Image (cartoon, rainbow, N blue to C red; front, side, top):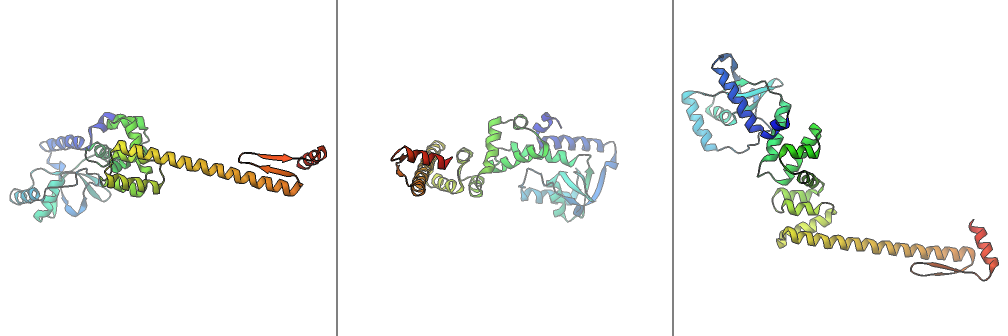
Length: 283
């Protein structure tokens, strides 16, 4: 499927498909079938999740009186069918008590529908950053496209795509806070790379003190510097302990006067004979 087609989104594509099929009804009534409602599953890729119950009740009453004027659109799905367009009509017909529904079986590939649905999902303005990241990841994994290609398709910058995907490296706790809108995308991308326990501390601070993204950047920068200093101190201390251990072993094994300081080990020999004996022993 072309990138231009992908970029148009599922809703626009399906509207065109439905219009084309409905238009053909005028020429052939054979396109319309009466299908049992229990043979049809709703489209799991449908971006729209909320339906106005009051309007569905009104439509149901109209269908009882006048019948369903516009068939729904379905595709074959195993032994049954998947609803592609007309979920509001589908719900209203079920509510009316009917066991069947007028439908047109469209010749569409389910894989293409999945692809389009992911694109439309990504382009929704109210999609939370974690769901967006999962949708981006699915597209990359399922269709083998690069970050650059995906950025062209979804009309986002390559850096935005990459940073969004990096959010999936955050801890489960942090991802949950992002999904619930307790911290923003801007906050979240700063936390990538921190240990889980540090993420939790920062997230709680962001929420508790209502930190801005800039304030969060400063806090994380201080934390990283503190962690780096601790690691450096630990490395130095480890090196000093190793030097001390080496000094003790040499002194004990070779009966040599050894002096150990913070960064060095000094061997003191009484004469050249001791030097020669030591060098011979360590060869």
